[in-house]
Length: 172
Image (cartoon, rainbow, N blue to C red):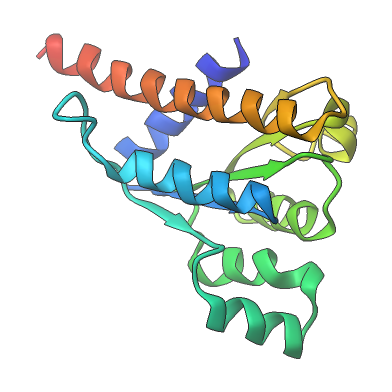
C-alpha cells in the first residue's frame, strides 16, 4: 500500500513537470545512484524516462558544503538549490536517523516537495516523527537485509510508476 501510494504521488509530480531528487549515505548513496539511473532509463521501451537528480553525485558540491558549512547540511543545501515544489525527494537510510537526511526531508517539506523515505531499524526518527509523506520501513537491524529490501522496494516503485504511465497511455 505504501509503495502504491508513493508511486501515485511520484507519478503526479512527474506529470506536473517535477523530477526525482535522491539522497543517501555510504551504501545508501549507491541506492540513490541506482534509483536515478532506473528512472532516467526507458526500461527497454516499456516506460517513459523520467527526470531525476542524484544529490550524491557531485563531489565538488559535497565537499564544499561539508567543509564550509557542515556534513549535516550536505543534502539540505542541495534541496534548497535544486528543489522545486513540483519535485519529489527519495531518501535512503539503513538507520532512519542520519542527520543530513533528516535535514533534507525537513527542508523538502518546507518547500512543498513530496517525500519518500526507505528506512531500516523500524524506520527510526523518520517514521517516528513522520518526516516523510511515504515511509517504506524495513523492520530489521541487519544492514545487508535492509539494503536488499530497499533495492526491491525502489525497483518496485519504478515498475509501479511505469505501469501507471502505460495505463494512462492505454486510455488515450
